[in-house]
Length: 461
Image 1 (tube, rainbow, N blue to C red):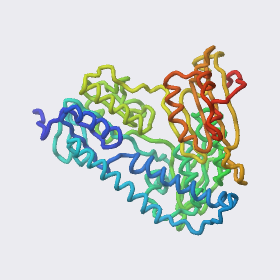
Image 2: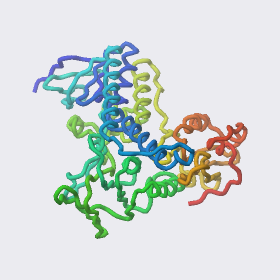
Image 3: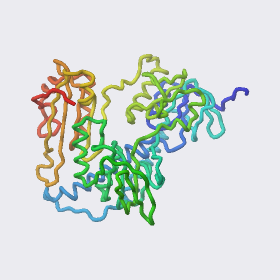
Image 4: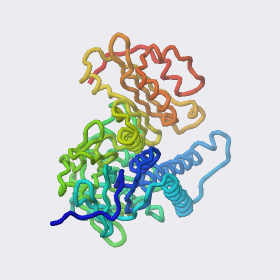
């Protein structure tokens, strides 16, 4: 078969218009590269359209509802909640997201990145076909992200994923959320905070089991305190439609009836299957992620991957950072430029939120053994001094060696999502416990507790 000629050739061809792909494309264009970007959906990817951004809006609404309902009167404020106007909330949220889509499009245009609307499939390592036309690149970046996983059980299609949550035009009365990761926790508490009856089905005894044990246990308790019913050591066997509602049957024999929505939050899968990656010899791992090295290189020279499709640290800022550094390396001669995947800060928008960076206590013990020391505290934020409703705050520093280098910081509590960024800088710079001690506390705040910790204990499993 003769070679297929391209309609258009680029120095940099980016497949995927999410946060990582757009960031890398625009950075490359800054260096004068001729860049094309292919995207079939709305610009901004998961984060902007069905992830971080609309989720944070719903989180803020749920928090506000809880504070008006439970706390306002105890602060002497005569306030109450009538009916939550879900449709109005969704309309304003979606209008905000649409504005962001427009901003992304204008940014691509101002950066002189050519936007190609459609779905790409590889026909050779440096060529793809989109809407019947072929495009090629000297360098090709795959940044197509992932999609929510749906289980292979009877009736699974009666459920929705987090994508479907953002399509809801009315608030469901009763929801079964399946999963124990951060998406499951966030969705469950948002729905509960906005007035839905929520049942959370988890396989183990706690949520967020990959997090530090202190965090996992504390947030599980808080999930239940927000009114979410947790069914532990359970898996869904089947979902049946009965009239206008659903019935969810568990492997324990329990049944949840009169369910309006089932939300699957059991993980995400990379969208490599849409690209015919294997057809051109790109290496995939057992989960379908593109295998990359520390510089985001795949096994084929000139083809790269960033973001969720590469299966490492599935966070929007990680994709953005890796994408920009990749463009720096390819188009600006910064040959050693790469993202360091150690000590990446992350937040979970639970109620209350979680902030974490570095090693868990268990991970530190496995790496450093008996040299691990742990400083921790549990307290109530001052906000709750006047309220009957309480939310716990917990904090932990994981330190190593005689110098007590801080290798892990874990927090749950009111406001920790806004605290973590600064502490993340310190830990990235190699801060020790004495550096924390030598910083004067800001009073009265919750963050001051991290610079006042005393009385360490040995690390333990």
